[in-house]
Image (cartoon, rainbow, N blue to C red; front, top):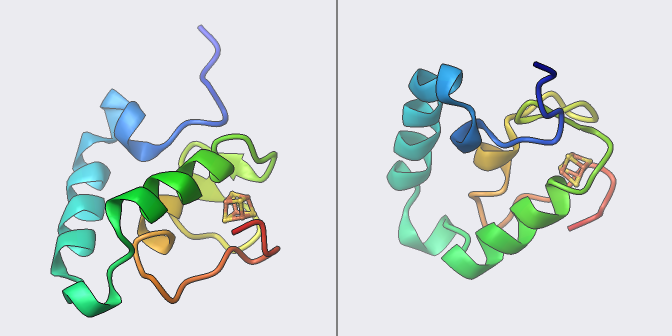
Length: 81
Ligand code: SF4
């Protein structure tokens, strides 16, 4: 079976441990620095239709997008969000 290249970590059962790390990292951000749930989902939706997303990782910056999108001050490396 071919894997979906444009998937987030949360959608990949084999990366459950990494997703736990993603959730903890997001939860540890102070509220003042955390992107709202709405902004977070908006950002991830852009990533999920971006050709640079490969199995949860942005190939423009090397980050897990679910961590990069969590901080209010973060930006997409090519300014898609
Ligand atoms: S952070 Fe930007 S470049 Fe990277 S996958 Fe998301 S939209 Fe694409």
